[in-house]
Image (tube, rainbow, N blue to C red; front, top):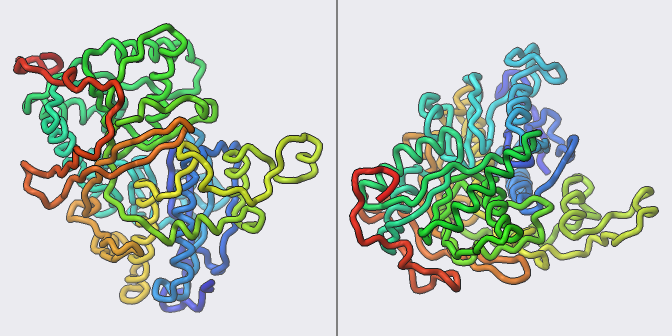
Length: 500
């Protein structure tokens, strides 16, 4: 482990702190560059409701930190650590934590800092946060920043390729399979509105027709549950009664929870279960609430999703195999996850009187179904991993060449270029987007609640505009009762945007 040495001259005797906030669905992670140079203990804050499948995102962050801290060629005199926070499905909690980052430590006065401790330098998040602190670099994963981010210039960097490449890829996928009669769901937010008003218009002009274009029901834990249920039933009927066999889901990381709810409703309402093929955007990922753990995942069979192009990290597999929650005293969250994933409890004064299965720590992650935990690094985890490295490399450049100008981190991030441990070059384009393409993933499910993500194509960022798609349709697995003809339309679209 590297320790923080004498930074006088580098930091002008001012403590230099880095906080990376990685906020998604149910956890919010903070990395902190500590003045002491000692590894921070992972700490769990109140109401921690871990979604087991997203635990891999945390491990990707911890793994990246471990590699960086053990690498004498990156920040040789600096050690990185982390904090964990719970956002609890609440955007207000996410914004509250963000304002706390701009306040004096232990005193909540937003945007007023009266000391030089814990200065916010960089933020990694999957939510757009309109922070006005111009000393802060913001890296987004896995969202594509479409609106306000463009106005923030060099302060924003996306661990996500140019989103237009994804939309062109989806369009070419539809045209390749002659799926010209589709349904569309999108999130009720700025990104979803842009998609529905601009991108779908482009689809329509290319011959795609729409049975319906609807907003996803909002995932809420408010008192208005009856209205939420009624809205969900309405959308579920729309899905099952639709004559389109192909549906596009434009969402974010938590959207899969809503999709699962919509497709679970017919099982207890005597509604027909019509097979659909879902096309999901790269911002989405598998997600499941605890009460959904026993719901089948048959709807994913044959689904097509887009994902940020990634490469396999073999060293990550070794890292996972080496995890032992009885030994990892620093990482409290490992025990929290372990108990949830393996349905057991670690020994303790209270546990001994409760009975039930005891965790031994010898349980194997690879025995868990993919709906609980995946051994292969997902695209979102890969983005977290690369985001940590991007900031570390940018800081290293400042450490070597520009130690007096902390605020120039934006400049170094924009120009950063490095090969990660998988051998892939990571860099940003002139607009702050990740210079990369997309993988096309085919989902194959199994009866034990597990699944495989099979790469069946790609969207190349450097390919000609009219031919960005590469697809290997011979290896695609389709749903058993999928009627591809139901998504083909012989008639040409009329002027109506929504119907043909």
